[in-house]
Length: 349
Image (cartoon, rainbow, N blue to C red):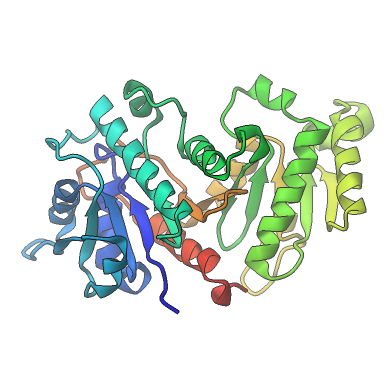
């Protein structure tokens, strides 16, 4: 059986995306084998020159005719499928519509290729939300864009393709009930339906990753998980009933637990697994701060609920260091590894 390649979208060309892609091909050729970049050849050639060690030639950048050609490339050769119209290179570190449009177009192409079954997964380099808005893109980020394209492909309204964000590293996994919204709106999003749906998506997705039913912990919304109603009653009126419904469906779910300690209980340390396989958090920062504190360079963002595999590094475009050659590719390399595991069942634990 012929393996399908993995597409890496170039991200915002004014940011560090192209640079960390070039570093991944340079430093982790065993990981990037069978991968290619969906983007712009000139942008990747600039990135290759940027990361070339002093006195060394840049990594070669090959123009591909089709995605399948990625498997024919030698190690340390960056294969690029030109999915964008040719345009002048953008300046590093500046928000501009051209860069936002290029980033979005790369993701659009990769999403369509994944939904057609031409690639096994897509790994998305960082884009910039303001640049997307400047380009007139109607979606605030990758997750919402991919959700809309997948729903259209399946002939469903977006509301019938719920997705969730999981951030994971070797020590901790966390899934969010809500993603990018104001905190007051995130609190309003803690409903019975949303919590139960998050538990169902988490169970299905993490079970596919682990090859067994996951042990799911649920963080409370309020300090000390409400302390029996003293600091809020969402745990009693909303979260606990959703947990009970999930258990009735056979899911291994516990909580709600105090959010200031549950992540420590779930953390794996070396050969010692955590008490739980994944924590469901009620809102963005509650869930992401613990994972990012353990090391942004190893964090991987995974979109759960899509009919395709999508991962990304756990950081943004880093305009402040773009073009300096200082960006760390570790999180991107981890994202490629994760995508390969999710796309190839034989590699799952």
